[in-house]
Image (cartoon, rainbow, N blue to C red; front, side, top):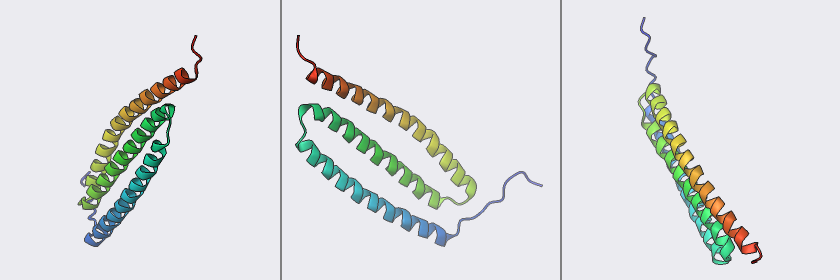
Length: 129
């Protein structure tokens, strides 16, 4: 007996359906991001100097969210093209490894921006001596 797991083929119809679903979900997400970016732009127009730091953090968070969801859609696209379960598992493992590194860097950037914004806000409200 072989230790290799049996190859489970993904039917072409299922792949086509999944690909269509991914495409539709990506379009809906892109429309959502466009509307959100427009809303953020409107808020930014009425922001004061202290709020500009918060807007910078918001823009970074929005950009990271878009980047992360785009990576997930890329993975979904690859998964629907996978020929068997072992290929799917390899793709998923590669994705998770990469995303953990990306999340770490994104957290560092957001933390740095938040600290900078808080520091600038504290300076703005601190009375001069």
